[in-house]
Length: 168
Image 1 (cartoon, one colour):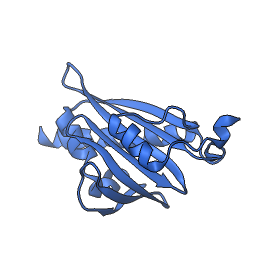
Image 2 (cartoon, rainbow, N blue to C red):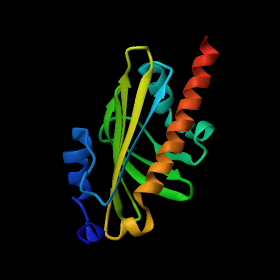
Image 3 (cartoon, rainbow, N blue to C red):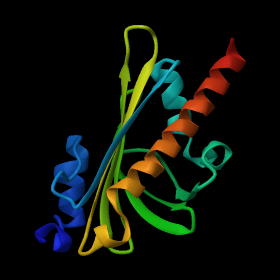
Image 4 (tube, one colour):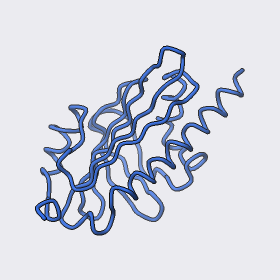
């Protein structure tokens, strides 16, 4: 029952003590982790992953509304479906990690995408997210979050594979 009313740390603390330190809020009532292996180098995956303005071309539910720069501390606004989200980059480590914190409908989130180079030239992309706020699990559960991550990662893999094939 305590997780039902869990508010989590303030957005500022969530950003500085969690997101910038490469972690999500493991105590949050809604968390998810999904991975995909892509037949491309981390640099090739990073190029697609960080081309946020081009999200709609390969992940049609995603659209950047405002983005000045992609750097730790920089704010951006985006839309997932019809839902508008305010976020701030926490980690922008080329070829390794892209993490941000954000707020939607008063719920606080950390989104983390980690790239791991595999010995065979492929890349594992792991997406983790925590979502905290009172009653959030009644409206948006971990299964729904994971399904969204799985769709996003499948779209990322398809786009990276298409771009890589075009370069061969």
